[in-house]
Amino acid sequence: MTRLTREEYVVGERIVDHAGAGPIHMLSFEPEGTGTRLTYAWDAPRWLKALDALFVHSDKDVRNALETFQREIEARAR
Image (cartoon, rainbow, N blue to C red; front, side, top):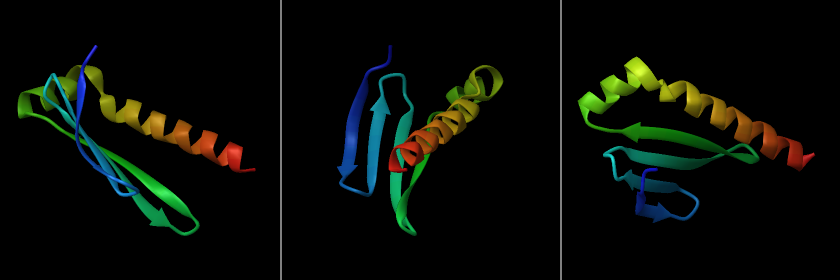
């Protein structure tokens, strides 16, 4: 399990967490029409990005998680 430390929190705008293993995780919130766009990004040392690209493929996990969030949020709004 990785410990996260909250580096920054701006209400309604962004959350930035630093993982004990090195990566920085960033969630951004932007108004879009009548809703909000949630964007995720991460940054890490080059060697960790290479390992992720070769073995973990977290980009697919993040895309799937964001799609699940969207489906669940839209289902509750109906």
